[in-house]
Length: 482
Image 1 (tube, one colour):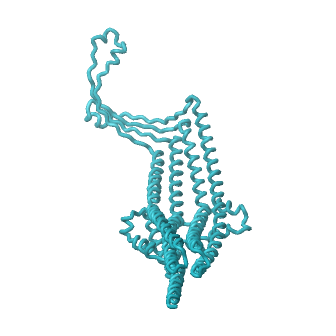
Image 2: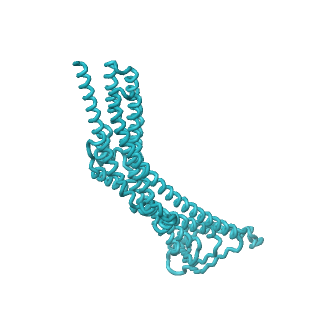
Image 3: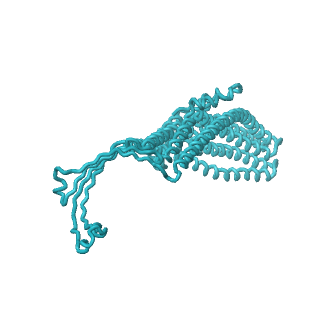
């Protein structure tokens, strides 16, 4: 009688422990979304300041700005000063035979000369200068557009990478929770075996399940570290600098698989993803009655991505035109001022300076037919650029349509997974009771617990994917501004 009461008390204790564990997993603790929001704001600030991609593009913009000024200077007069000190002995008059027999005994004296010359050239029209200015301005515009695009994508990329890290943390936390539940099940199996109600197979199966969880933990931890490194590689902050900025203290110490429960990580994910806010820009395009051309019209009117493609095509046109630079006439204004004497005192003295001024028109008359070939080269290069623009624009439109379809599917999947999660939670609770009553074997209990783990992790992944795809789609549509 006393033995039966003891067993009953132990079962009640284990049942209460199980209920407490489940309550702690799903309802205990809270993480204010303001904490993850504050960290994200700090992380975004560091990204805008330190991101390697943004630093490279900012340097490129500065380079192209300097390059455009350099191109404009080609229109300005170029003035060069030459200072020449020479010593020559010229036999050409003798060897030419102009002196006849007298030249046999003639020996020219060596001559030393000092000479200075100022020369100036100003292009009144030079095709290469004109195209150089056009090309430099086009390259500067493209660099500025690339920087604008990178700045505007910081939000969704940073949320996606931080979300990937949170996902790995959540897997570890959920695994810890599942392991705690599995340990409770193991104790129940050991108690039942001790009382002769169950076989040792149940104990071994429960232990094998825990060993499998331990093996998963190593892989999950490796993935967590990789996600962390990927995040800070994008931010442009080293681990040492992250510590100096106390980013690890704000983030790593709080979002740690050893210190948090599932509810806290879920709160952090919700604060980071802001799913309802992320879906607002794309909602008008998700309606079943939305016209098919609505996406195309939006892309044409507002998409910064499409504008970047158009600028790239214009740059390709400008580059194609440069192949015919040498086939055009040139009109130059040239001038020079010089003086030479036997020494520098004479060369630098006033008076007797020579000068020249000329307007030079250079017309290419024959170059082996290169005028036709370079023209064909230019035309085909421009056609290739136009074709590439159409291809990239079609790809962008198809990508947006695929993203919209993916958002619709993820929303349905998220809803179904939330229903499935509630069902699996109830199944785990009932399976524990059924096992204690001997109405269910241990394999079914462990299977229900594993199904619960997979459903929770799957729902987390779906929510993160939905938020990331929604923001990227809004970015492609021009709805997400920097």
